Length: 515
Image (cartoon, rainbow, N blue to C red):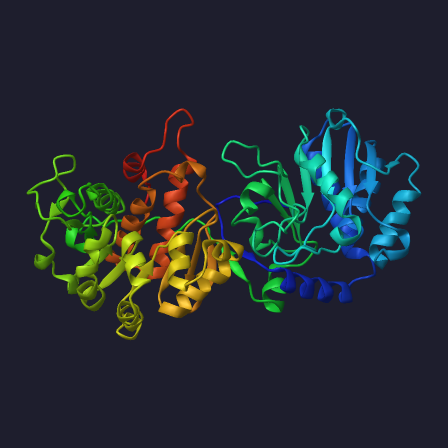
């Protein structure tokens, strides 16, 4: 059993791949073996999470996820725990493996069976969610359990989500789509407000494979601490049988700077953006300066800033290392350009030249919004791939929706799919920002980033990320390498942020540990 932390790369497998691997494993083993292994793993983790627990409530569904819970109940009861089972099933409809686990649990006289959840969950030391597992799709209202046991299922889920005791989810928190990280309609927590308790598991034990939905969209809040048990399937067995759906990104290699190097060894970044007072009656130069600061702290040798206003300052007093340049003076063919941060409509005038001439390019914010409305600019963006010009797009869900001519709801409904559609459409690397940022590349399996938290939900952090990616491109990294490195370090800095200190984008740029 393994605790999942952001210290290594893990393969992720969707529901279809997991089921095929499960079938292949079951064909090689004695009947009921996989469920026995799963139930034992659940019982072992339950006792590790709550070693002094005396009473454990297990909510079991009518399928194999419920069977895993029933198997765990048998082991926990034998270990001397008081186990209370609430079961949403009937013996006649149980799958064969689950029926064998049900029979074992029924013959264990110390197990208490209840038709409903305990009325007072404060008397429970641990709750185990074995209701639905991977048998849920966020694209449909009907699930294997909701059609028959809808009202009871909703009630039991509400009980689990409001529990003061620790909650351990078996495989996937019930109601969550293992592929997308979205909740199935009708099975969502009561609220997703910023101040509300997520109301789901504090621990999730993913069985056989790790699922992508645990690490993106609502998955990270829903799953809590993720654990994984391979049920005896070796890495070779998994990877040889099924290609991963995605990778959970691990820490990138830390860079090394030789003594015999100079600023030219690490490339030049140009930040083009920051529409100013003269054009809009309001200043937006801060976004460009944040991106420039992040590029410096991300290891760029030099950073040039081209502010898109009519009042060209001659220096930046707060950070004199940033060198101001008129756009016309930039030698775009030799630069890694970060374009769009605070650019407003002014960026429209420079985009044709940037797309045509920039040696490497990060497109963010206003640049993406303008490209989404202009077919000629879209063609110019796609043409960069044929000329071997590295390009990274960094949209948030609404910007991604504009580029795909859809809605942000549809983008969030399947973040991996949306990122793949963007990278296919524009033939470049895509960083779809959000909880569990997705990094996709035309020729690679997508990555999901494991670092970061809600403190990044503040103005300017996206500009910092764009500048970090630009620094990686300037240093000669591939777009995928630069994106993975920057996104990981960006989130890692937020995870290490002092709890009593507000996170601001300017401070974030200065605390990035990269390169």
